[in-house]
Image 1 (cartoon, helix red, strand yellow):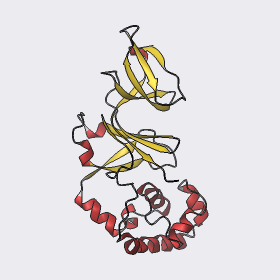
Image 2 (cartoon, rainbow, N blue to C red):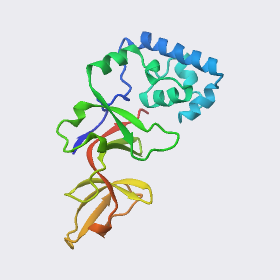
Image 3 (spheres, rainbow, N blue to C red):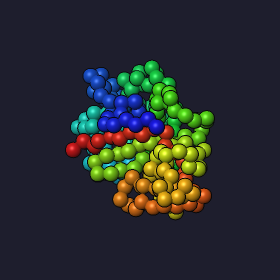
Length: 223
């Protein structure tokens, strides 16, 4: 499994900023302003609908903060405004995207009111052991000031070897390290990532595995 720590610069939704973004992104801001005015939308309500604070879009559109709208919120905004997301992408980001090949991953949780797909560079697939990209999904979880993003192969529903897997307990997904139990080879030792779930031993055929983790990274939120 590939693991990256810190800021991930390969995923498109990372807030990459260069000297050209201020000029190019002004065009995007004007498009959004015109669409909002045309459809008679409220900035506060739109901000809430993309899961941000009430003043988020007001600050983005009129104060230039953030300098670049993160892709996860741009997709949501495009859906709300009923436009193609490409209309809201600044030219500098299109230039970056044209130099790399990307593929779309779907959110395994498919949450209502959330962005349920993100773009990844195909370079992330290099060295990963999988058969079909259609079996790859992403899963995100949060702890403290970290956001952990993983690529999950959902074609793997059984324990293969000691590694990190995505488990499902009554539609609650969580990450766990799984290995053979030291007490019995017929049982598995499951150690969840976080304290929401306690470690446990279980017969291999009773464990509900949703997929095997192929790739993982973490992003530290800015204070």
